[in-house]
Image: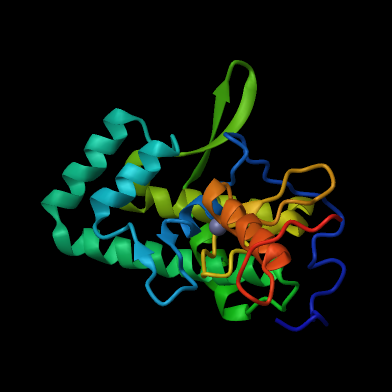
Length: 228
Ligand SMILES: [Zn+2]
């Protein structure tokens, strides 16, 4: 995406600050969706979304659907397999666009306009269905699950992505530094921004072990402990 935007100050909404703040477990939903494909940068990525039911499992785990809603979605997918396959394909297309965008953010590369367009289009689909509800005297925006239908997980992920991309936290998105192609995307919430590996202890431990071996391996293959 070009750094010189054609948007004027007015069209950039500079008069208002609009923020989408994500509540939950502190791990943004959009990044969680990108991580449903493990070791995505390796020669053998592992796909966990092989059917629409897998997507419902993920949505349940992330608490964006309750048990009743999850059953309803599975029932709807079972009743119309082609629609479920189409929705899964759309969700995966969104996921891959988000993965490229956030990996670009993590490595300070330019964002692809095509990928931003995929996220924005999905967000707009969701925004059309937003309702305002009164909850204990507070006005809260919400999605009507019945109207969202099979698209509910995808829409929630797109809202999360726009929330993260437009927040200061976007600068804290990182990609696991593991050299086997882990590709896990995460938000570094450490105070000094020092996290480089994913939440799996495996990547960090492996890197530490490799460093240890490199530092302590002598030319003859025997291991010595040097005094630092
Ligand atoms: Zn990792």
